Length: 430
Image (cartoon, rainbow, N blue to C red; front, side, top):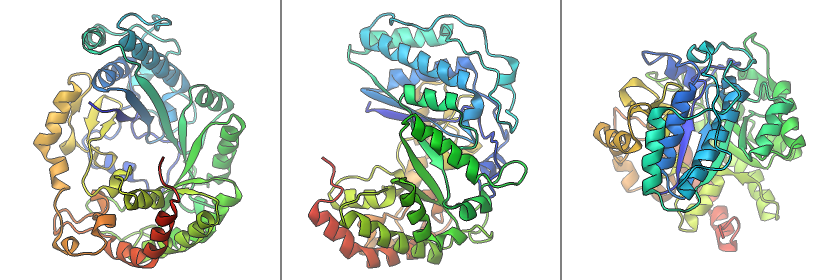
Protein backbone atom coordinates (compact mmCIF):
# COMPACT_ATOMS: atom_id res chain seq x y z
CA UNK A 1 0.00 0.00 0.00
CA UNK A 2 1.12 3.59 -0.54
CA UNK A 3 1.62 6.07 2.32
CA UNK A 4 -1.69 6.79 4.03
CA UNK A 5 -3.23 9.64 5.97
CA UNK A 6 -5.70 9.01 8.77
CA UNK A 7 -7.95 11.81 10.05
CA UNK A 8 -8.87 11.28 13.70
CA UNK A 9 -11.60 12.90 15.78
CA UNK A 10 -10.28 12.12 19.27
CA UNK A 11 -12.95 14.20 21.02
CA UNK A 12 -15.68 13.43 18.47
CA UNK A 13 -17.60 16.62 17.66
CA UNK A 14 -17.12 18.22 21.07
CA UNK A 15 -16.09 21.85 20.83
CA UNK A 16 -15.38 24.87 23.02
CA UNK A 17 -16.82 27.19 20.38
CA UNK A 18 -20.22 27.56 18.74
CA UNK A 19 -19.57 28.59 15.14
CA UNK A 20 -22.89 29.32 13.52
CA UNK A 21 -22.05 27.54 10.26
CA UNK A 22 -20.39 24.40 11.70
CA UNK A 23 -20.94 21.56 9.22
CA UNK A 24 -19.90 18.86 11.69
CA UNK A 25 -22.47 19.93 14.27
CA UNK A 26 -25.03 19.40 11.51
CA UNK A 27 -23.64 15.93 10.75
CA UNK A 28 -23.91 15.02 14.42
CA UNK A 29 -27.62 15.85 14.33
CA UNK A 30 -28.08 13.52 11.37
CA UNK A 31 -26.84 10.29 12.96
CA UNK A 32 -28.03 8.04 15.76
CA UNK A 33 -25.18 8.89 18.15
CA UNK A 34 -24.35 12.56 18.22
CA UNK A 35 -21.08 12.41 20.17
CA UNK A 36 -18.78 9.44 20.74
CA UNK A 37 -16.97 11.09 23.65
CA UNK A 38 -13.19 10.93 23.93
CA UNK A 39 -11.17 8.17 22.28
CA UNK A 40 -10.02 5.49 24.74
CA UNK A 41 -6.40 4.41 24.93
CA UNK A 42 -7.35 0.91 23.77
CA UNK A 43 -9.02 2.32 20.64
CA UNK A 44 -6.01 4.58 20.07
CA UNK A 45 -3.61 1.62 20.25
CA UNK A 46 -5.72 -0.49 17.90
CA UNK A 47 -5.89 2.39 15.44
CA UNK A 48 -2.14 2.99 15.50
CA UNK A 49 -1.28 -0.70 15.16
CA UNK A 50 -3.63 -1.29 12.24
CA UNK A 51 -2.77 1.94 10.45
CA UNK A 52 0.97 1.30 10.66
CA UNK A 53 0.45 -2.29 9.61
CA UNK A 54 -1.46 -1.09 6.53
CA UNK A 55 0.83 1.79 5.57
CA UNK A 56 4.06 1.63 3.62
CA UNK A 57 6.87 4.17 3.80
CA UNK A 58 4.86 6.85 5.64
CA UNK A 59 1.75 7.42 7.73
CA UNK A 60 0.19 10.76 8.63
CA UNK A 61 -2.05 11.07 11.66
CA UNK A 62 -4.15 14.23 11.33
CA UNK A 63 -6.38 15.30 14.21
CA UNK A 64 -9.61 17.21 13.72
CA UNK A 65 -12.96 17.72 15.39
CA UNK A 66 -15.02 19.35 16.71
CA UNK A 67 -11.98 20.62 18.56
CA UNK A 68 -9.40 17.84 18.89
CA UNK A 69 -7.44 19.45 21.73
CA UNK A 70 -10.41 18.72 24.04
CA UNK A 71 -9.08 15.15 24.17
CA UNK A 72 -6.37 16.63 26.39
CA UNK A 73 -2.63 17.03 26.01
CA UNK A 74 -1.97 13.78 27.95
CA UNK A 75 -3.87 11.88 25.24
CA UNK A 76 -1.71 13.40 22.53
CA UNK A 77 1.51 12.66 24.41
CA UNK A 78 0.37 9.07 24.76
CA UNK A 79 -0.63 8.82 21.11
CA UNK A 80 2.64 10.17 19.73
CA UNK A 81 4.82 8.14 22.11
CA UNK A 82 2.97 4.95 21.25
CA UNK A 83 3.03 5.61 17.48
CA UNK A 84 6.74 6.44 17.50
CA UNK A 85 7.59 3.29 19.46
CA UNK A 86 5.45 1.11 17.21
CA UNK A 87 6.98 2.61 14.07
CA UNK A 88 10.49 1.86 15.36
CA UNK A 89 9.49 -1.63 16.34
CA UNK A 90 7.90 -2.39 12.98
CA UNK A 91 10.91 -1.02 11.12
CA UNK A 92 13.47 -3.03 13.08
CA UNK A 93 11.43 -6.19 13.50
CA UNK A 94 11.88 -6.23 17.26
CA UNK A 95 11.06 -4.31 20.45
CA UNK A 96 11.87 -0.64 20.07
CA UNK A 97 14.18 1.27 22.31
CA UNK A 98 12.09 3.51 24.50
CA UNK A 99 9.03 1.28 24.11
CA UNK A 100 6.04 2.68 25.99
CA UNK A 101 5.81 1.56 29.58
CA UNK A 102 2.70 0.44 31.40
CA UNK A 103 0.22 2.92 32.80
CA UNK A 104 -3.19 3.09 34.37
CA UNK A 105 -6.31 2.71 32.32
CA UNK A 106 -8.04 5.86 31.05
CA UNK A 107 -10.44 7.42 33.51
CA UNK A 108 -14.18 7.15 33.22
CA UNK A 109 -14.24 10.67 31.87
CA UNK A 110 -12.74 9.45 28.61
CA UNK A 111 -15.82 7.34 27.90
CA UNK A 112 -18.20 10.25 28.25
CA UNK A 113 -18.94 12.99 25.74
CA UNK A 114 -16.59 15.88 26.39
CA UNK A 115 -18.23 19.00 27.76
CA UNK A 116 -17.69 22.30 25.97
CA UNK A 117 -14.80 23.37 28.19
CA UNK A 118 -11.23 24.46 27.72
CA UNK A 119 -9.96 21.94 30.27
CA UNK A 120 -8.34 18.71 28.98
CA UNK A 121 -10.05 15.44 29.72
CA UNK A 122 -8.73 13.11 32.38
CA UNK A 123 -6.69 10.74 30.23
CA UNK A 124 -3.56 9.15 31.65
CA UNK A 125 -0.41 11.05 30.79
CA UNK A 126 1.81 7.96 30.88
CA UNK A 127 2.37 5.67 27.86
CA UNK A 128 0.90 2.22 28.25
CA UNK A 129 1.43 -1.34 27.11
CA UNK A 130 -0.60 -2.43 24.08
CA UNK A 131 -3.67 -4.55 24.62
CA UNK A 132 -3.61 -8.26 23.74
CA UNK A 133 -5.55 -7.54 20.55
CA UNK A 134 -3.22 -4.77 19.40
CA UNK A 135 -0.12 -6.80 20.39
CA UNK A 136 -1.26 -9.63 18.16
CA UNK A 137 -1.75 -7.25 15.26
CA UNK A 138 1.67 -5.74 15.82
CA UNK A 139 3.33 -9.18 16.06
CA UNK A 140 1.78 -10.16 12.73
CA UNK A 141 2.89 -6.87 11.25
CA UNK A 142 6.50 -7.39 12.34
CA UNK A 143 6.56 -10.73 10.51
CA UNK A 144 5.40 -9.13 7.25
CA UNK A 145 7.07 -5.72 7.24
CA UNK A 146 10.54 -5.38 5.74
CA UNK A 147 13.19 -3.59 7.77
CA UNK A 148 12.53 -0.18 6.23
CA UNK A 149 12.00 3.04 8.19
CA UNK A 150 8.38 4.09 8.46
CA UNK A 151 8.04 7.85 8.52
CA UNK A 152 5.45 9.38 10.82
CA UNK A 153 3.85 12.78 10.32
CA UNK A 154 1.45 14.57 12.65
CA UNK A 155 -1.02 17.36 11.89
CA UNK A 156 -3.85 19.02 13.79
CA UNK A 157 -6.65 21.40 12.84
CA UNK A 158 -7.67 23.68 15.71
CA UNK A 159 -10.06 26.53 16.26
CA UNK A 160 -7.24 28.22 18.16
CA UNK A 161 -9.40 29.04 21.16
CA UNK A 162 -7.36 27.43 23.93
CA UNK A 163 -3.78 26.84 22.77
CA UNK A 164 -1.40 27.28 25.71
CA UNK A 165 2.37 27.49 26.02
CA UNK A 166 2.41 23.78 26.87
CA UNK A 167 0.48 22.90 23.73
CA UNK A 168 2.74 25.05 21.56
CA UNK A 169 5.87 23.50 23.06
CA UNK A 170 4.50 20.01 22.38
CA UNK A 171 3.63 20.85 18.76
CA UNK A 172 7.13 22.21 18.23
CA UNK A 173 8.82 19.24 19.86
CA UNK A 174 6.88 16.71 17.79
CA UNK A 175 6.92 18.73 14.55
CA UNK A 176 3.15 19.01 14.16
CA UNK A 177 1.75 20.89 11.19
CA UNK A 178 -1.07 23.01 12.60
CA UNK A 179 -4.06 24.40 10.77
CA UNK A 180 -5.66 27.38 12.52
CA UNK A 181 -9.21 28.43 11.71
CA UNK A 182 -9.29 32.19 11.16
CA UNK A 183 -11.85 33.85 8.92
CA UNK A 184 -10.08 37.18 8.53
CA UNK A 185 -10.21 40.47 10.39
CA UNK A 186 -11.90 40.78 13.78
CA UNK A 187 -15.11 42.04 12.23
CA UNK A 188 -15.29 39.20 9.72
CA UNK A 189 -14.12 36.43 12.05
CA UNK A 190 -16.36 37.34 15.00
CA UNK A 191 -19.51 37.39 12.92
CA UNK A 192 -19.87 33.60 12.96
CA UNK A 193 -17.02 32.12 15.04
CA UNK A 194 -18.38 32.54 18.56
CA UNK A 195 -17.62 31.00 21.95
CA UNK A 196 -20.18 29.20 24.13
CA UNK A 197 -21.29 32.57 25.56
CA UNK A 198 -21.92 33.98 22.11
CA UNK A 199 -18.85 36.23 22.13
CA UNK A 200 -16.32 36.64 19.35
CA UNK A 201 -13.14 34.56 19.45
CA UNK A 202 -10.80 36.60 17.25
CA UNK A 203 -8.43 37.75 20.00
CA UNK A 204 -8.14 34.26 21.51
CA UNK A 205 -7.18 32.88 18.11
CA UNK A 206 -4.62 35.62 17.45
CA UNK A 207 -3.08 34.98 20.87
CA UNK A 208 -2.79 31.29 20.01
CA UNK A 209 -1.13 32.12 16.71
CA UNK A 210 1.38 34.28 18.58
CA UNK A 211 2.28 31.26 20.72
CA UNK A 212 2.76 29.08 17.64
CA UNK A 213 5.04 31.72 16.18
CA UNK A 214 6.97 32.03 19.45
CA UNK A 215 7.80 28.32 19.40
CA UNK A 216 8.31 28.24 15.62
CA UNK A 217 5.47 25.79 15.02
CA UNK A 218 4.65 25.35 11.33
CA UNK A 219 1.08 26.44 10.69
CA UNK A 220 -1.32 27.52 7.98
CA UNK A 221 -4.61 29.39 7.99
CA UNK A 222 -7.96 27.77 7.19
CA UNK A 223 -10.70 30.20 6.23
CA UNK A 224 -14.39 29.50 5.64
CA UNK A 225 -15.87 31.56 2.80
CA UNK A 226 -19.34 32.70 3.75
CA UNK A 227 -21.75 34.80 1.75
CA UNK A 228 -20.84 38.02 3.60
CA UNK A 229 -17.08 37.40 3.70
CA UNK A 230 -16.95 36.53 0.00
CA UNK A 231 -17.45 40.21 -0.75
CA UNK A 232 -14.31 41.03 1.27
CA UNK A 233 -11.83 38.67 -0.35
CA UNK A 234 -9.10 41.24 -0.92
CA UNK A 235 -9.49 42.63 2.57
CA UNK A 236 -9.07 39.13 4.05
CA UNK A 237 -6.06 38.37 1.86
CA UNK A 238 -4.40 41.71 2.69
CA UNK A 239 -4.97 41.14 6.41
CA UNK A 240 -3.24 37.77 6.21
CA UNK A 241 -0.35 39.24 4.23
CA UNK A 242 0.09 42.08 6.73
CA UNK A 243 0.39 39.48 9.49
CA UNK A 244 2.82 37.36 7.43
CA UNK A 245 0.37 34.47 7.17
CA UNK A 246 1.50 33.14 3.81
CA UNK A 247 -0.15 29.71 3.72
CA UNK A 248 -3.88 29.96 3.03
CA UNK A 249 -6.65 27.44 2.53
CA UNK A 250 -10.13 28.72 1.74
CA UNK A 251 -13.11 26.38 1.90
CA UNK A 252 -16.70 26.96 0.84
CA UNK A 253 -19.21 27.30 3.65
CA UNK A 254 -21.59 24.34 3.62
CA UNK A 255 -25.32 24.55 4.12
CA UNK A 256 -26.92 21.89 6.34
CA UNK A 257 -27.56 18.42 4.96
CA UNK A 258 -30.96 17.81 3.41
CA UNK A 259 -31.50 21.55 2.90
CA UNK A 260 -31.59 23.45 -0.36
CA UNK A 261 -28.51 25.70 -0.48
CA UNK A 262 -28.75 29.44 0.10
CA UNK A 263 -31.21 29.52 2.99
CA UNK A 264 -29.04 31.08 5.70
CA UNK A 265 -27.41 34.46 6.17
CA UNK A 266 -23.99 32.74 6.07
CA UNK A 267 -24.82 30.76 2.92
CA UNK A 268 -22.36 31.04 0.06
CA UNK A 269 -23.96 31.46 -3.36
CA UNK A 270 -22.32 30.86 -6.75
CA UNK A 271 -22.16 34.55 -7.62
CA UNK A 272 -20.54 35.37 -4.26
CA UNK A 273 -17.97 32.56 -4.70
CA UNK A 274 -17.14 33.82 -8.18
CA UNK A 275 -16.62 37.31 -6.78
CA UNK A 276 -14.35 35.95 -4.05
CA UNK A 277 -12.22 33.85 -6.41
CA UNK A 278 -11.71 36.70 -8.84
CA UNK A 279 -10.86 39.32 -6.24
CA UNK A 280 -8.44 37.14 -4.28
CA UNK A 281 -6.82 35.91 -7.48
CA UNK A 282 -6.06 39.49 -8.49
CA UNK A 283 -4.05 40.25 -5.35
CA UNK A 284 -2.50 36.78 -5.21
CA UNK A 285 -1.36 37.09 -8.83
CA UNK A 286 0.09 40.51 -8.13
CA UNK A 287 2.24 39.05 -5.37
CA UNK A 288 3.41 35.85 -7.04
CA UNK A 289 4.05 37.51 -10.39
CA UNK A 290 6.15 40.04 -8.53
CA UNK A 291 8.26 37.36 -6.89
CA UNK A 292 6.55 36.95 -3.51
CA UNK A 293 4.89 33.54 -3.37
CA UNK A 294 1.85 33.18 -1.16
CA UNK A 295 0.47 29.67 -0.98
CA UNK A 296 -3.24 29.57 -1.77
CA UNK A 297 -4.14 25.89 -1.82
CA UNK A 298 -6.74 26.22 -4.58
CA UNK A 299 -4.52 28.28 -6.88
CA UNK A 300 -1.52 26.06 -6.06
CA UNK A 301 -3.47 23.01 -7.20
CA UNK A 302 -4.59 24.68 -10.41
CA UNK A 303 -0.94 25.29 -11.24
CA UNK A 304 -0.16 21.67 -10.42
CA UNK A 305 -2.73 20.59 -13.00
CA UNK A 306 -1.27 22.96 -15.59
CA UNK A 307 2.07 21.26 -14.98
CA UNK A 308 0.47 17.90 -15.72
CA UNK A 309 0.33 16.77 -12.09
CA UNK A 310 -2.62 15.47 -10.15
CA UNK A 311 -4.00 17.93 -7.56
CA UNK A 312 -3.29 16.97 -3.97
CA UNK A 313 -6.58 18.46 -2.78
CA UNK A 314 -9.25 15.76 -2.94
CA UNK A 315 -12.06 18.18 -3.89
CA UNK A 316 -10.23 19.02 -7.12
CA UNK A 317 -9.68 15.49 -8.43
CA UNK A 318 -13.15 14.95 -9.83
CA UNK A 319 -13.51 11.59 -8.07
CA UNK A 320 -13.48 10.89 -4.36
CA UNK A 321 -10.26 9.31 -3.15
CA UNK A 322 -9.54 6.72 -0.47
CA UNK A 323 -9.77 8.51 2.84
CA UNK A 324 -9.82 7.27 6.41
CA UNK A 325 -11.87 9.28 8.94
CA UNK A 326 -11.94 7.85 12.47
CA UNK A 327 -14.46 8.88 15.11
CA UNK A 328 -13.67 8.65 18.81
CA UNK A 329 -15.26 5.19 19.19
CA UNK A 330 -13.06 3.81 16.41
CA UNK A 331 -15.76 4.02 13.74
CA UNK A 332 -14.33 4.54 10.25
CA UNK A 333 -15.87 6.66 7.47
CA UNK A 334 -14.91 7.53 3.88
CA UNK A 335 -15.00 11.35 4.10
CA UNK A 336 -15.17 14.09 6.71
CA UNK A 337 -18.35 15.36 5.06
CA UNK A 338 -20.02 11.95 5.39
CA UNK A 339 -19.42 10.78 8.97
CA UNK A 340 -22.92 9.38 8.92
CA UNK A 341 -24.39 6.01 9.87
CA UNK A 342 -25.12 4.96 6.30
CA UNK A 343 -21.46 5.41 5.31
CA UNK A 344 -19.83 3.64 8.28
CA UNK A 345 -17.07 1.35 6.99
CA UNK A 346 -16.41 -0.54 10.21
CA UNK A 347 -14.47 -0.02 13.42
CA UNK A 348 -10.74 -0.19 14.10
CA UNK A 349 -11.46 -2.23 17.23
CA UNK A 350 -13.08 -4.96 15.14
CA UNK A 351 -11.97 -4.63 11.51
CA UNK A 352 -8.75 -4.39 9.54
CA UNK A 353 -8.12 -1.61 7.06
CA UNK A 354 -8.45 -4.17 4.27
CA UNK A 355 -11.91 -5.16 5.48
CA UNK A 356 -13.01 -1.54 5.79
CA UNK A 357 -11.70 -0.74 2.32
CA UNK A 358 -13.77 -3.61 0.90
CA UNK A 359 -16.80 -2.17 2.67
CA UNK A 360 -16.10 1.16 0.95
CA UNK A 361 -16.41 -0.62 -2.37
CA UNK A 362 -19.59 -2.41 -1.33
CA UNK A 363 -21.21 0.91 -0.38
CA UNK A 364 -20.22 2.44 -3.70
CA UNK A 365 -19.01 5.69 -2.15
CA UNK A 366 -16.26 6.35 -4.67
CA UNK A 367 -18.28 4.95 -7.57
CA UNK A 368 -21.06 7.48 -6.92
CA UNK A 369 -18.59 10.33 -7.40
CA UNK A 370 -17.55 9.05 -10.86
CA UNK A 371 -20.77 10.16 -12.53
CA UNK A 372 -20.08 12.96 -15.02
CA UNK A 373 -22.91 15.41 -15.82
CA UNK A 374 -23.63 15.86 -19.52
CA UNK A 375 -22.78 19.55 -19.31
CA UNK A 376 -19.29 18.71 -18.03
CA UNK A 377 -18.53 16.51 -21.03
CA UNK A 378 -18.48 19.49 -23.38
CA UNK A 379 -17.24 22.19 -20.98
CA UNK A 380 -13.90 23.72 -21.92
CA UNK A 381 -12.96 23.97 -18.25
CA UNK A 382 -13.70 20.35 -17.34
CA UNK A 383 -10.01 19.42 -17.03
CA UNK A 384 -9.49 22.08 -14.35
CA UNK A 385 -12.89 22.11 -12.67
CA UNK A 386 -13.68 18.36 -12.62
CA UNK A 387 -17.11 19.21 -11.18
CA UNK A 388 -15.71 20.21 -7.80
CA UNK A 389 -16.35 18.50 -4.49
CA UNK A 390 -18.99 15.79 -4.25
CA UNK A 391 -20.50 17.48 -1.17
CA UNK A 392 -21.56 20.42 -3.39
CA UNK A 393 -23.07 18.28 -6.15
CA UNK A 394 -26.74 17.55 -6.72
CA UNK A 395 -26.36 13.82 -6.08
CA UNK A 396 -30.11 13.19 -6.38
CA UNK A 397 -30.25 14.95 -9.75
CA UNK A 398 -27.81 15.35 -12.62
CA UNK A 399 -24.78 15.48 -10.30
CA UNK A 400 -23.87 19.02 -11.35
CA UNK A 401 -21.93 21.09 -8.84
CA UNK A 402 -23.86 23.90 -7.17
CA UNK A 403 -20.95 26.28 -7.81
CA UNK A 404 -20.59 25.41 -11.51
CA UNK A 405 -21.24 28.94 -12.74
CA UNK A 406 -18.73 30.36 -10.24
CA UNK A 407 -15.98 28.09 -11.53
CA UNK A 408 -16.80 28.88 -15.15
CA UNK A 409 -16.72 32.61 -14.56
CA UNK A 410 -13.48 32.38 -12.60
CA UNK A 411 -11.65 30.29 -15.20
CA UNK A 412 -12.69 32.62 -17.99
CA UNK A 413 -11.30 35.49 -15.94
CA UNK A 414 -8.11 33.97 -14.52
CA UNK A 415 -6.92 31.31 -16.96
CA UNK A 416 -4.72 33.58 -19.15
CA UNK A 417 -2.76 34.68 -16.09
CA UNK A 418 -2.62 31.15 -14.63
CA UNK A 419 -1.22 29.89 -17.94
CA UNK A 420 1.32 32.70 -17.97
CA UNK A 421 2.53 31.72 -14.48
CA UNK A 422 2.80 28.11 -15.62
CA UNK A 423 4.88 29.11 -18.64
CA UNK A 424 7.23 30.93 -16.28
CA UNK A 425 7.46 27.92 -13.98
CA UNK A 426 6.00 29.75 -10.99
CA UNK A 427 5.08 27.32 -8.24
CA UNK A 428 6.32 24.34 -10.23
CA UNK A 429 7.12 21.36 -8.00
CA UNK A 430 10.72 20.17 -8.07
